[in-house]
Structure formats: C-alpha cells, structure tokens
Length: 412
Image (tube, rainbow, N blue to C red; front, top):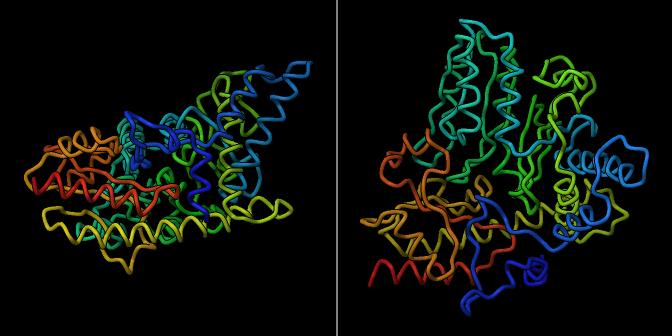
C-alpha cells in the first residue's frame, strides 16, 4: 500500500491544528473518513433526497441506492445474498432490537452465554432480554495473560439449555481476536444460535459469514471509514422465522421487516463509498469482483497493520513503566488488531490522554463499555486504560512521535 498517497484522501489527516498535523490514534472509537464518502453523502442529499416507493426520479434513485448498499454489505461480509443485510442507526440499537425478537420464546431454565471480552452492547442486550424471560446468563472469562477467551471455560458453560452465545470477534479494548469458527461449531452442537459483534474486527480483517457459519453478525460503518450506520447479517431462515417488533403494515418481507422507520439514505450512500474505498486498496482492476478486490485489500492493510503492531510492541519494551493488556508477542500479531490497552505506573489514564491531546495526538481513555473485561483486569474503578488504536492510514513516524511523548511524560 502507498500509505502516503491514501492519506491524502482523508481531509482530517491533511489538516493543521495550531500549526501541527494531528495524529489520529483513536480509530477503535471511530475512524476518519475519506473525501469520497463525504462527496457521496452530499451528492445524495443535494440531488436525490427522497423516500422509498414514490413515482418519481429521486425516489427511484433512493430505491436503487438501498439495493446497492445491501449488495455492498453482502460483498463486505460474504453474505449469500443481499437480502440478508439489515441496516439501522448503529450496532447497539440493532442488537437491542434483535435481542427482543430472539428472546420471545425464552423461558425459565433457558441459558445465554456472553463474554468478558465484549463491548456491553453485546452483553446488556441479552442480559435484559434474559431477565424479562427468567433465563440465566453465563459469563465467559478471559485469559488475563493475553486477554483471549478462556475456551475451556466457554466449553464448560455450554449445554443443551443454551439458547444463544453472544461473542465479539475482536476486543475493542485489547485487540485480541477470538476463534469465532470454533465457538460457532461448539454452540451449534447444542442447538444454540451465535450472535457475533464484529464492530472492532471489521476495519482490520476480511469477514466471511459463510465460512464462520454464524447466525448473526453485526458491525458499524463508522469504524471502517464510513458514516454512523449499523448493519446486521442474519441467516435467511432466522430473518424469516423470528418475529421482530415492527409497525404493522411492514412486517412481512425481509430484510425490511427488521428495519424500523426511515433509513438514513445519505449514510447508505456514504457506506457504499466506504466499501469501495476499501476495495480500492487492493490495487486490482475494477474488472475484478468487489469481493475479490476486498480480499486483496484486507491482505494489504493487514500486512501494514501487523508491521505497525510489531513496531509498537518493540518500542513499548523501552518503557517498563507501561503495562500492556493483551497479546504482547510480536510473533503473534496476526492474532490481534493494532489496538493496545495500556496502564502507566503512577499516572491516571485520563492524565495520559489529556497530555497527548494537548499535543494533538488523539487517543482514548476509560473502559470503552468493555465493563466485564476491565472488571476482570482490575482497572474498572480506577480509570480503565489508555487505548492506542492504529488504522491502515497510520504510520511508523506517528508512532515514533507518540513514544517520544511517552518518554517526555514519564521521565520529566
């Protein structure tokens, strides 16, 4: 990848703030957006702003736009067809909606499995649904050494009463990637459904729902260079057979029966542009299918991000005052995203992020709604962690600037 060239497509990366070029290491909270996405959203609103079903040109354009957005999402996650894609305002709202529908027939004695690795959108939704039905919720521990899931503990919790397993593809706090295919295989052996939160995983690696065989998978476009928009993939039989909470006249046809109210059509326009931006990272001719281009694009970006991870871990070894939660072995960077959870000896996480923020380096601090993880790691009640998150548009030079400031903070 020509990182210097692709960076020029992002207005945020090209700006100057108080005479300095800002450094965005806040990607896990939301990525920056290329100009093509901004242009697509403005073009839709400026020329075709309408709704579905009208007998005029702008409504026709909107119908076409929605169809194109579903196909772009299907290409992104390798859905069998575009009608298995449901859009909504964000992953959290969609997950709460799906939790109400999937839990309709739960009863006392049924069980649900959630994990300590997850963002609480994929925990609280199922906890509250289970509470309404008198079902039991079990929590899978993480291995504190590298913040991966404890699969032995997961296996011990799984049984014939388990109705659903909710699990994250990758931790939004530590970057550790989970073995979703194994979890799906084990869950299906006892007849349980699997709902995957791929929000943090989606910007970094190619998703293949058919290979995973998961029942549902959710992600958010604003984490992979798009607008604020959520989407859920669902197996066709589930989208047809479960009953959503829905306005009466629009209850019958998938995927629309799962979508409440008017979609953000401008966000769908931006989403299509974001998927196409990623596909263009492949360097392949557009005669190739979009899925082929996406496959090569993620290979390219993964290689660059693994190089950033190795460099980050190597530089981090210079600072014994900093503790890393997550995979710290450079030989295992393919098992993590370039997202790093840190604690600084004697310095609160907020103090670190404020210090960096004054230098226009954007990072996050806190628990990032990963409450179970931060509680198990013992950092929930004392500020959480500092989270450094790289995207494919970040550079080694930016990391050098970051570590120079770490040195200044710790040694002055």
